[in-house]
Length: 197
Image 1: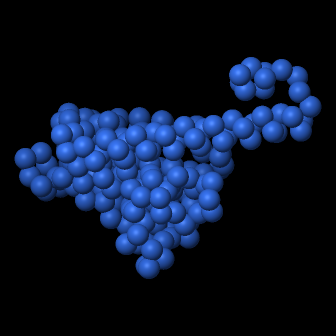
Image 2: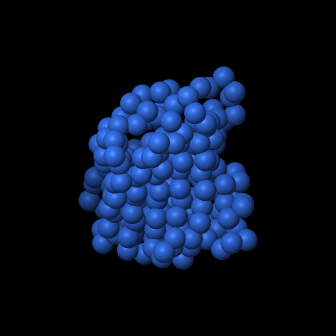
Image 3: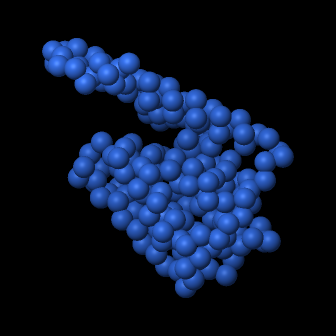
């Protein structure tokens, strides 16, 4: 209904109110999706899928899935691949969800640049998301993965995205950590080789 209303010729004030409503509906959608994801992670019967993916294509598809959410077109997202092998076995759906949440978080905090890095070594695969924002204070790094914890004002994000990412990575036998990178925050996903962990 809102989309149809927005397609009509409207006074600017009315258009802005309708666009604000659309933004609120998107936020509610995001909250519902995060709550469902969080709820599914509490189910011990859920086991990760194991699929071999081509890493550069996989990362490219994840960046493409969040690219239209960039509010500032000047923000640059780039990829650094350090892989002796092209493929890695992981759960593509869960891994994509975890990385999308990390990228959305980076979009909220970055100033001009986001970098995604991938490194494969004998023990597993490491994927990191760097931003050039303010970083995360040391006293908040322990809490950042708690459900509903947020450093942003109410109404900006759900406070569930990082918690969902943490649960997803843990569910796959991996580890998600945060540190301050060279310019902002660095979230690092470490996934083990299948059969290890």
